[in-house]
Image 1: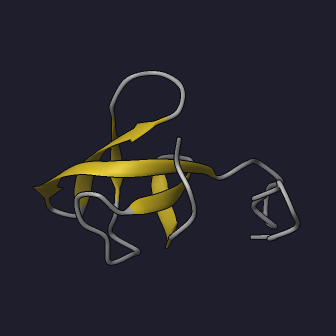
Image 2: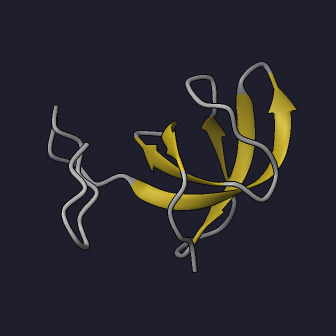
Length: 71
């Protein structure tokens, strides 16, 4: 993950990681999260420690970091 200003890009595949706010934990490492665009989505939070209200960076449906800003 690169942290250049305005860019959050996966170093492996060059895709963007998008900030999303965790709305609800579902169990089994899954959560419902809301981003700036579109409706709520089910994501995996298995790789991070996140809870409702936390902003996570999501890449390919997987939260890969906690922190950042979300609309």
